[in-house]
Image 1 (cartoon, rainbow, N blue to C red):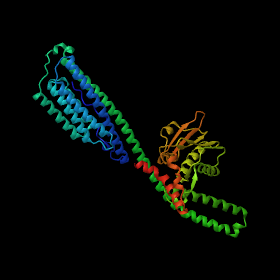
Image 2 (image 1 turned 90 degrees about the vertical axis):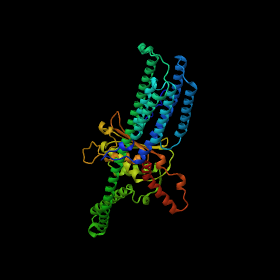
Image 3 (image 1 turned 30 degrees about the vertical axis):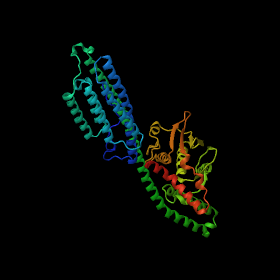
Image 4 (image 1 turned 180 degrees about the horizontal axis):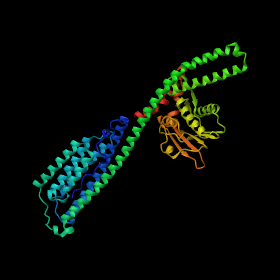
Length: 485
């Protein structure tokens, strides 16, 4: 007897159920692409299981006709199955397109399954066929897969089909031998129908639950990302505003110190002159830090971008960091190998310095940085001999305000590191060493940080500066474009 058209995996509920009042909504593009992927998975699942239904119906018809010697109109029933197989092939062609699978398409697919089941039941006993209860399976699929109006329409249609079978179909010539129990053909048919309904529902609900958990996890990740990016925007605005405010007093102090240097009282006293020179050096360093903050915020990025190479960028960064920090024993191993052109980017530079600063604070006596070329990525590994990360910090690694230093507002350094790496498609991992200390590994795809050769081969100097500025902006913007897509 006919078996049901199989289920798909995901209900029609989409982003409306994922966001509640007061919560951050994940990016719409991410939700739309997720729903589109699930719709195509549903279509593929439906196609695969419908083939199973065709094979099952053929086997059931042949067993009943030849095994139980209950005469069935084989020609007509096989023609119905041929139509179902033809519809499935059309669905297969449709699934290869990238168009979104709508509620209407799922509704039509289930209506075709209901029509096929009704036709098969009409040809094999109508309402007296024990497989008539497969209509309940169709209604269950509609309740899970379709919108409310579509589900209630399925209820009405299947009820009409059941009533029509009771009124117009011809009953099967089965003996009334229910007292024989499992030896009765009718009882056997009901048992097969029950087992088939139960098995398909278990398989269907299990897959639905698994898909819902995966979808909820993905939506939670998108929501967390949106929250973190909003947090970074707020921090960037605050840092940019502070940098602008600090620019004027720093410039004033630089002018005053320059005037002091020329005063006789200072120029005649070597000790005071040395102190003035040291103050000027520190003021210059503060101005450089302020400029770096503005560059990281995307302001005037192209003005100071310059072409370099990966190894040179790392060497200069390490040299500058080593000379400005009180590190006792610092090991640096650059195994990048074949050098590649890139634009010196302040955000990447600050990201690596943040990791080194955290490691130095935990392990002031020894520190190691190793750079390597791993497939199509640059890997930077920072190792220290400190106390290592607490288990709670490792579990929430990269989340804001996760710090063991006990300071208000702490824990933002690694949060920024993780997010800067993510904007260029990279990742950051942390672990504790068995012998003590911690390891932080940064992996950055070369495609996001390396200049293509044709971009650097510019004939005129002005065009060359413009290309470098554009490449510098691209490093900071590429991750945001990837997130929006």
